[in-house]
Image 1 (cartoon, rainbow over the protein chains, first blue to last red):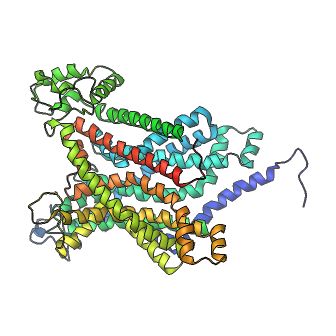
Image 2 (image 1 turned 180 degrees about the vertical axis):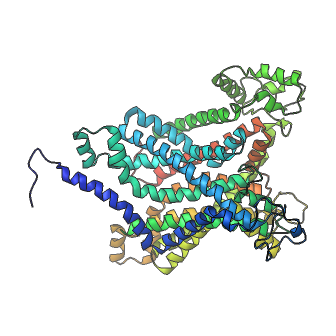
Image 3 (image 1 turned 90 degrees about the vertical axis):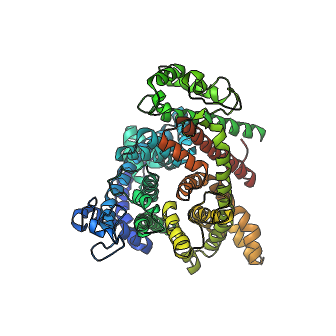
Amino acid sequence: MTFPEPGHQRPAKPLVQHRRTAKFRGKSLLRRVGRSRTACFGLGLILFWCLVALFAPILAPFDPNAQHMWSLTDPTPSLTHWFGSDALHRDMLSRIIWGARPVLVIAPLSLLCSYVIGITLGMVAAYYGGWIDSVLTRVIDLMLSFPKIVLYVVLIASVGPSAMNIVIAVILVSSPGIARLVRGLTYDLKTSDYVAAARIRGESDLYILAIELLPNERGPLFVDFCTRMGYTVISIGVLGFLGLGLPPPHPDWGGMVRDGTTLLTVLPHIALIPAFAISSLIMGFNLLADGLQETTEAA
Amino acid sequence: MLLYLLRQFSAVVFTLVAASFIIFLLVESSPGNVARKTLGPFATDAQVTILYERLNLDDPIIVRYGRWAGVLLGLNADPLADPELELNFEDSRGHKYIGNFGFSTMMKVPVADVIGARLVNSLWLAGLAVFCIVPLSLLIGTLGGLFAGRPIDRGLTIFSSVVASVPEFASAVILMSIFVLWLGWLPGTSPLQQGGTWPIHLQYILPVTVLTLYVTAYVSRFIRTSIKEVMASAYIRTAILKGLPWRRVVFVHAFRNAMIAPFTVILLQINWLISGVVVTEVVFAYPGIGRLLLEAALFGDIALIEAAALIAVCIAVSTQLIGDIGYMVLNPRIRFT
């Protein structure tokens, strides 16, 4: 065992190793999923819906918007229409399958944008501190004190419902929460030795933030991402349900439940099937987050 | 302590002013002519022109916000009450009073007339839900936390994960299918009108259950974690080792400390509760402020949107303030600074 000479208190080697541990962490994330049965089950549910969305054109037996008049007499589930047909005689199974697409595109896309914004704001606030921090914290607190649903309803109602506007609304609603989380994480990490070392080496702030700090915040951020995916899917569903989601002909789970509630007393399957579909996807994300959290606590 | 309260209070005021500006900005700077949107598609061009001038829509947004805030604080009159517009809008309270949100173009009455009763209904719904949420989540969370890792905890965790995955509109549909359609025990809508086939107290059951399920699942997890952490701490071990009865350790030593974090969580859940309230009210046709907000938003009733949104923010911010103060009072380790 050799001691570092004075003046060389931070040799280059540990830094390299540190970056390697960050790389290994990515692998251990998958291993952590494998270790928890809950996480596996959650991941399975998510993958199932991803595959359904991906192969929608092959899997769906009918066009999701085609009206089948012969089902007029009996819209309940049958051999031709496994999940029955809805009030406009469209095949429910096809609509459920195609309906997986908008959710699984809008939710991750808008969340990724929110993470870019949230991470930038949170890191800048914590790293630079001072007035930047206090201004940003104020803004974040302000945005978080809004009930989410109010922001969603007011926003979408004033700009009109469309996929793009839902993405914008999700970004506005979720980035402040992410910024607060990242600010906390960065605040804890910025006093660590390797940040000091990078500073002494003369690395730029951008390098320290993106290469030194960000990889070390991956673990909590990933758990947060899974939880937030669940919430975002709920929000998209709620927007669809309130009539602020995708415009009508598109198959959209929330909107399908909304259409079904008016006929609930006669044909409950129209509302129940999409309700179960959306719940199972949310459950996937929640269980994955739970499982990851569990293995983090145990480790 | 007084200084602390004063500071918190001024922060709340700041938040409300900023929030009202954001709402105003979102509602009134959306594409299109605000005068046309206020009056609706059936107004004459002459009316739109008059309102456009009265509202001075060419002014910068901040000036218009100032004027709107003036109406709200009773400093100037609402331009919609102008007899030249021929809308016949009349307000029994006069033209200038505090809390004047203007006129609802959807209902053709002053907003202040509509909001009151709806707000009371929503508060009832939310209050009843909280009344169920708190004991239930305490029970589930405490059981889970005390027996962490054992079968009972696993069962409860799975249960709350599953329940937390069913959004309110889905659970409402599922519960309605079971209790309204299949069993026929409860009414499917809750318009709160006397004289229907269902008495009013039965109309509350399903909406309250839907709200309770989701939020309970969420809050009980926090309580579970909190109890689990406290039970693992040294002072609890000491209490057990010195031979105190287990029940006393749990209820006197652990419970009080473990409640500090969940207390804030429960109060901060108000944001979840509010969105739940909106959805539940829409599902069950419950005459509350959430449904009012949605109807106003879909109709394009600007004054009503602003009023309902601002009231929702107001409720959220004030419960957060209560949560903060309660946290300070419960936790003597935090100093008032």
